[in-house]
Image (cartoon, rainbow, N blue to C red; front, side):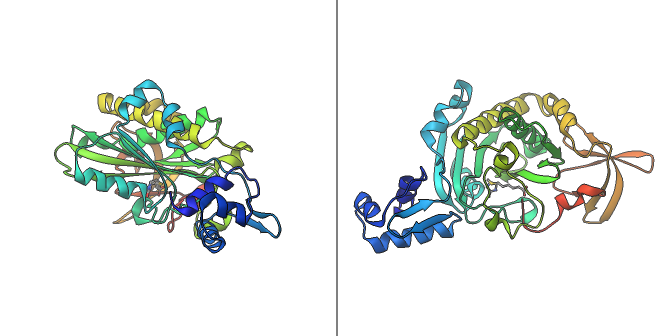
Length: 337
Ligand code: BTN
């Protein structure tokens, strides 16, 4: 653990800790403590410094804890998880696992971080990932089939995230094809699937989920589309370790179901939560914009678009979708979220 992480652990309960007390607890000088505090502030944490009292977090934070997450998994999920890493800061949890995938044949490796300094979003965007209580989670999974059979995987993952949100008490989130999770048109979670290895043979996929739980507004000024977070929606503090375990459990179950049966077991839930269904939409293709009416998805995860009396199929990764009506801003391009 770095000095900053040790200090964070000492401050996590929201109580005051004086500089000398932190110095004694860590065996470091007051200057070193001060520098570590500045480092924590620069990663997005709000820390008060009060003369005569010391340092205090603006809000207590439940730090992510590997053992607590693992203990909250069910036995199937525990068996499926080969390795569970919880980091304070990484470049990107997806990038870490892509590196793991390149080095061996691991499946079931999970990487979770308190913050990312190079979080990745879809279509080359950045995923702003400050410290402060969100969840950045990736899972490496090796499929025996080739990439061509994984067309609907990102939709199955989106359904898994929705199931975890339902368990957490969020009743009104919706899905926007291919895998955005929105609440009243505001982005609550994003999913990024990245492929490692050969597309033709057995392939490894890194499934990355970013879930806004407690998002420091100041850090999000670069995000140019409406976003929201779970604690604002639920109006209460969220137990992050429990939520991380629930998300992981749903992801693992969804992936193993998808391996056996494809998208079929997820279709009904997708239809129930599909924010585009029956809406007039605009598809942004490399060849130009297409206007039509969204008619759900097929079993390969393609968006069905009714246009000029025919039903067209459009596949994830090739197109972006913009609602032509009032929620249009929820899909604006630029920085992620
Ligand atoms: C999107 O643009 O909607 C997808 C965002 C995906 C973000 C998650 S956070 C965990 C994982 N690591 C990353 O770098 N990105 C994904």
